[in-house]
Image 1 (tube, rainbow, N blue to C red):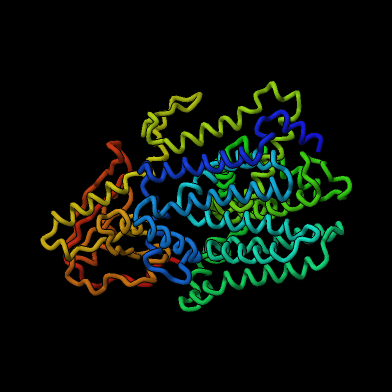
Image 2: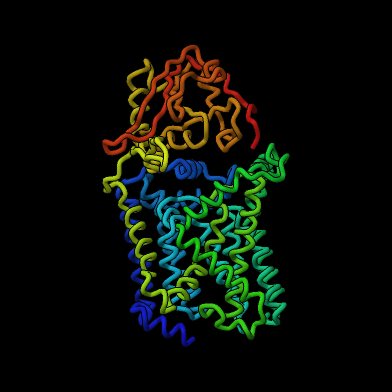
Length: 544
């Protein structure tokens, strides 16, 4: 406790933590609101897909639960269909995450300085920046996971009462409706109970109330998803098994080493290198504390007591470690381990706090890292105003090779311009514009066209050998015999696929590079297709 007081005296904000927490939460929320209102970034493909779900409300969907569609449907009703309405839920969720984080660490755990440092870490990692700007399933999942994590801690305190377990059940249910990953909270909670029980720190009746809370939460969250999957040949669960590498081609190879570098690189990029190192240091020290005797663990590491160290150890290591190991078996997307960073940002804050307290390191510019993170936060939210070239050349050290690189933001821009181009073709390149439908060859392009083409038409996703997706469960254009169509593919392609060409009497191809605010963006191939024969392909996918 003395160390924490000393740290608070060293940092001005430690004297009024509630005020500075309010400044951080309100300030970052205002910046995010300004960003989504600025039009700097078109809806990315996943956001467009979830918006398309929101105008076809169901109990669940092919890849995720229904919560993301429900949230978007709510706020687009309030603000109208547009980037602000689609993304408002993300900004609200980000504010909720920060509030839960401060109340959990600062008030419940009585670590206000650590709470503030955790807010800084969270707001200056790319993972939390993206989830606060883009309406993806990680946002409501993280809200639910943060809430469940601190309800679990609250319920493990003496005389905690019933409310922590009621709220825990609601958080678990909401998280499952957002993303199946929330099911990982069940073993997380049970492991936490085991560690406390091993140290004889469990309150009376905790295990039974925890089991009831988890059971009710899981049942409430899974019920609509199970009913939908039962009515749709369990395609959602088959998709998850395929991605996890327990079904399909990946299941045939147990160990492979080519996936790990991509996965680890993605983790470092999501968190930023310096916070990633602080996070691993904090996680390691918390693990050691949780495996020691409780009487020796108090203030053993940056003031984290035994109970707190156990909570964040269980919240970080099982999920993060599992995906680390599983990346040696199959491809793991970088954001799959996102829930482990709910504990990770606190552990990084604790490691940084301990590091900054050491007199030796103060002269080494330790505060450079939060400052650099804040600079990146600002740059991300005003990136359209920065004079960053869209293409640039990089010379490979010690060689004569020069790599032509594209600005990563290029991949996310140009959708509005593409939509306008498709609409112009529909009106000007066909005799009967009212008898023209739009389609693509994958779900993200199909969703992007559905949102960005003026009038937001019903679009279709042709299947001539790809994996199944949500659009395969919805009706195709089978009844539009004799209609014309516009077919769009990503990048410049040479020829149309034979399976698609066979659907029409005639096709014509053109290449088009979209633009964003007068700057070059993504490349597309657009086909004008005439005379649909009504033979929309079904059941030609390669799996889930």
